[in-house]
Length: 457
Image (cartoon, rainbow, N blue to C red):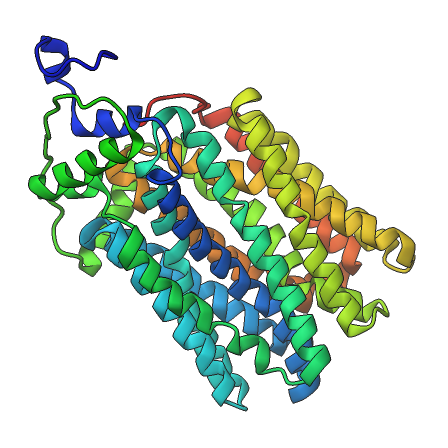
């Protein structure tokens, strides 16, 4: 199978197109281009979500909002992401990864910019919701696109490294916003920076081919062969004969097909879907509470506004180190054990932070430690869940888990600031989150297998 001789041996003629893609060497001018464009999309996704943390204190001051009202800025965005994750996961399985990715970028960019033109909380919240619908599609579509081009032996590392774009985007949101606000003192300027992802759409058109796995499933064999041959050529791999096998093309997208898809995800395995939903819900709720409310908590504790933004940006930026640690450990320790340790430790650090908020010298180390450890957990979670499902359910399985987490992460902060924190204090409220994470980890260890180095279906 590894010889460069063409189709004489019978074993090489039974090679499928998918197997060719899965066994290619990884090259920057082939799969690396897709990783870079996909990564930039993911970076802007993080940037836009992190803007909520900037906008909550700015608009609270500008429009005189109570915490429970201000919470809707982040909540509407995340609920939009929940809708987007379901709808776009399915649309990508129907219209293709490339077109879906370009559309998600355009939609979240346009509606974030629309927020500049309103002085009304209701309209602003509505635009954050619509921006969220575009954003919600970006993550699952992006992961499916990059994952399907990446050879099996590098996939764990590449998909985990993809998450390195997230802390870059989240940190840029904080640093760029702190600079814009510090220089011109206008809350609209951080929103104006979202013209940039709209420009990325051109890079998608130019540098990203359609996923050959998607084309094969659609029965578009000539196009699939063109993409695969192009990849073989650009990676410098020996040319081998292969066959293209098609499954049935998907039916058109309807509400009924969404329901059927949800049923398929559960029918495939209730164990896997329970674990995917529980882990996404627990870990992402904790992350979004920190991402969206950290500047507010710090300002409440007496930090000056720009210092609160920069400290929060530091929390996001140091996550890059977490992603590097995650990338190194993900193949060595296995997905499950790394997740079982990093997720509860990160949440426990937030309980610790709440206890030392009135000691400024202790705040920065705790914020940075949380920022690093949570970004060990999240990339492993994304990689793990996308590997638990087979190809035809990967977009939708990940999409539904992501949706459940967005709903939880949308409503979680609302309950957290309006109800849990007033009743139990900040440390008590984070302790409740910690219990949730520990329960989810126990469920995962009981019900789901490890996927480390398993060949994807």
